[in-house]
Image (cartoon, rainbow, N blue to C red; front, side):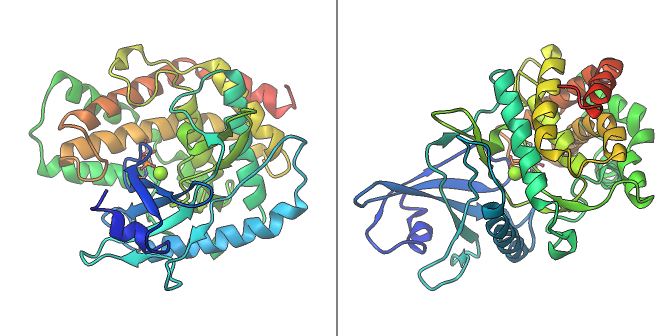
Length: 369
Ligand code: GN1
Ligand code: MG
């Protein structure tokens, strides 16, 4: 703990830190849970932002300020159904009143309040959980639907722009034609066969069919907190990619994460399947809060969003494998290849169930429950 103690101590009076331990499963930033001494044991979240991925972390803090101020203004006017709560992590200041601390080595540290009596899971546990994950994303979008996206900085240019990821893949490939294996060949083939349709969401955006909105950027299942007692969703965490984007990025990402019961870290990639019942329940939960802003065009692009965001994550993992694992933290040289295979298999399963998925979307667009 001593290593991280100086960072934790920036955000709390001396002598109060009892413990600092690694927390969560983040693939990019380093996250710690800090436990404090006191009348009641209190925790906060301490994070070291990855400045290789986020070259301007101060813009992340700026977005967090805009986002939290908006939500705190809006939440009191937003009646929640009985028995529900909704929490937004607060930015904690250093003892000097700053929203971050640069350590002597130049690392960027910031702290957030911890949401009590809540937990998350890496995979969907049952259909009720799927509904809650969808509900959380729908409420999140609903609460942000009157925040003008221009007020948020683009903290990660190119994020979820598949054509940019393809350019990067081509560049990495040209420099590094080495790594061949049956699995790598499978990934190359998978990308080659599908790159034609990669720009569908960007084209719809350029044509004005899909508007830019304020989005979460990374609403995977383990970023949705559930109340420990009731199982109801209480909030979304991991707000570093809150920025302008398409709600389709969020929905596609949430469904590729939720719709894969084996989870994105499974070793058994050949067994990966997209679960239609989870897809339906998650979308039902989402639409229970999103119907007021979700348009006919939004429904039209939903299937493509699920397919594309899944394929995109496979492409991102595979490119990182080829590049030597410089973006996603990896447990070994083949880890990102294994992760890519999971997403490509999931994308294939989505494609093989296109008719059924489109059927669910159609039924729900008519108000089906
Ligand atoms: C990364 O760091 P983490 O685990 O919150 C990534 C997401 C991916 C996710 C896959 C900024 O999120 O886009 O979907 O891994 N975040 C960034 O698990 O690239
Ligand atoms: Mg994240």
